[in-house]
Length: 163
Image (cartoon, rainbow, N blue to C red; front, side):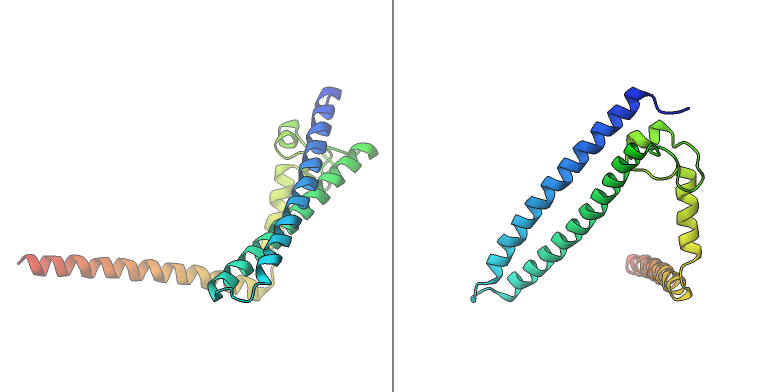
């Protein structure tokens, strides 16, 4: 069922609000970065202060990148509205349900199509990435086993002490 005019207008305004918010946050983040830059010019800063500054800058950069990508998605959705292709899954050509668009107004695919794409990305990951993830899982399991062993020894020690 195609989106109603009211639903489309509601989503359009929602996207515009997101666009304004993301553009506004960009300016706030830039001013925060300038403040951090001013702090780093001091000569007497402690090494821990420098570590904090580096972490703050990395966080700011990450937030900027996420906001930039999200703004691109919002702009893409607004363009699709103008083109008349908004709400159509890019993978299947099916209509994206209103509920999904209400939750994620810049959605480009249905939930099922998005899940398929994400599954394909995991499957297509280079072997070294899969091996890395398997090793991380193995390490997690090893830590769990080590923790259980440690707990078992603690219980045995307590039993020995109580005798």
